[in-house]
Image (cartoon, rainbow, N blue to C red; front, side):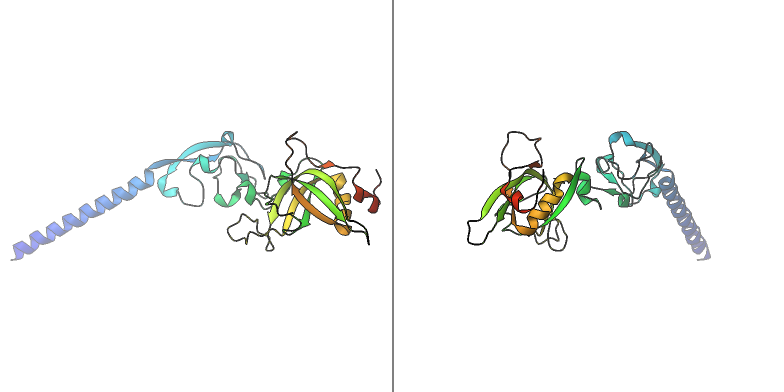
Length: 238
């Protein structure tokens, strides 16, 4: 009987040793198992759009990998860096520092061209003339001015104005999952010199956005109608 106990004890020791050996080797393999991850090739400045040229790869132990940074360059290319973040050479592409263009904290300001400003127009389905307005679309701005006992004056004020944002009452983009989908604010890319004019017209007249359909020139944008009838009532001086 004692002999059997010794054999059983010895067998148990061998099992424990083998288990420790395998566990150690698994841990060691994981420790030294190398994986390639993308890192910054050269310093990337704040609010920069990332291209493939900004990315290089290094090998690190797989145990080093976690879900706080990107592992696939396809998830990185065309994203923008945070406006507060300078990403130095060899740094990781942390998810919290990269944004899709539409999710940028200062979006849609980056969509403005030179000498343009973003004009926030409070709106509703009436002001949109029943149109479904989306970001990137161009609209014509019409004004309707009512004079007492006279026929309303309707005229085109600015043609081919680019829409850079459509938000609901809570400030969500209407395409956001939490949005109710009802437009409340439309952001327009207006030439800076036209800002006082559209503000004045918006104060005294009904302003409507009509989908721009003319295809004569896709490059045409924010074209001012200097002969608009509303100008007579807002003290416009050429």
